[in-house]
Image 1 (spheres, rainbow, N blue to C red):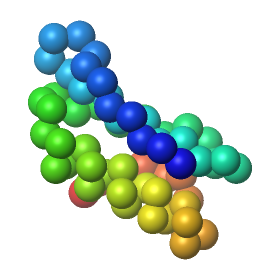
Image 2: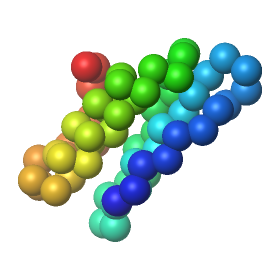
Image 3: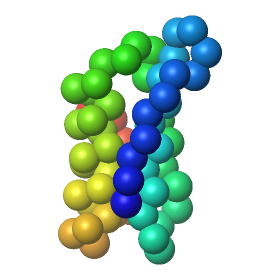
Image 4: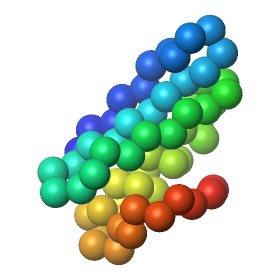
Length: 60
């Protein structure tokens, strides 16, 4: 339900999306591009809420 982002080493950032009843979703970004990371997390959360989440890899 929440998404968290934190630095992973010096050059990478990781975002995690957790929601009860769904597998953990993680994605690593090369920079702290909050807009890109937030957009990805929002898409995942929205799909989970709407019931259309498939868990398949996707690109924005």
